Image (cartoon, rainbow, N blue to C red; front, side, top):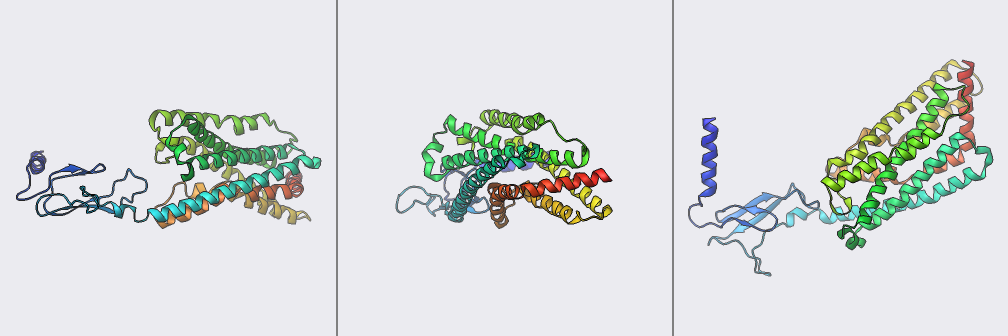
Amino acid sequence: PFTDSFLFAGVRIKLLLPPVGNYCNRTWDGWMCWGDSAPGTAMQMCPTYFQDFDPGEKVTKVCNPDGQWFHHPESNRVWSNYTQCQVHTKDRVKVAISLYYLAVVGHCLSIVSLIISLIIFSYLKSLSCQRISLHKNTFLSFILNSIVTIMFLSVSAVINENTTSSNSVSCKILAALTQYTSTSNYFWMLCEGIYLHTLIIVAVFVEEQQLFWYYILGWGFPIIPATTYAVARWLYFDDKCWISPHTHLVYIIHGPIQVALVVNLFFLLNIIRVLITKLKETHCTESTAYMKAVRATLILIPLLGVQFILMPWRPEGCIGYVYDFFNNIFSHFQVRLGERLSSDGRRFTGYIVVARKICHFD
């Protein structure tokens, strides 16, 4: 304790007493604080509170031999060199613009494709059943999420900078709706997993299930985390338009989503396990169709968000840009899901019948 106190006193004296000879006085440049400096170049790491700054780069400030801070020749004002902090900013802007257009195009294609799928499901009366009703609600949640996301991206984009800077209530409501529809997506996918798991494994002899509880889970439950997130954001991290992801409050949304994904993945793997087990035990002409059912289930796995379970956070560096690209592909392109389920509606119904028959005969 005595040694620590002595060292602390020494450091304090060094900070309070000016350097020997000519030196530049301590100053605040508007972004960072600079202590008393001997002639030469003083350096600090770039501040972390600017999103476009690279905290791994350095800020420099020159102290002239006469004890005066360097003045910029054009402005004739004291100047700190922050240029290295933004060396990669232009590249980041290009990546951000590319991801923006990728997201918008993906959502637009998804809206068109999913609307077509809804029309097909509604037109073909032979596909009218509980499972198709779940598909319709899942598609509707994707459509709503795509519409709200496009609106939110447009508001938060550079071209609408004035709207973002105004920090309007409508912008924050749109941000909360984006979180609600996104959460609803994952919980409707969970409903799909619960339904298939119940149909094939738990209740193979039950023809109908109560869809009311699916509606509560898919549309009702996401209101809780979305509302909690909005209130917490307003109270503890009320930034402009609630755009910044740099807060632990996002786990209010991400937590339930991760739980839904893990449970859904368990259901899918258990379904595949049972199907493969039954296939090995059953030697009949329906084996080919059965394997197609297994493959169809496997195809759904990446569309149900398994990538977020394997890599729930964004890595740093160049790998982060690769993560952003694939994240946008999986998150914003639901087109193939709609096309797959609509074009294979009858065939997938046949797969379920095959599964139920084999479980029944066993």
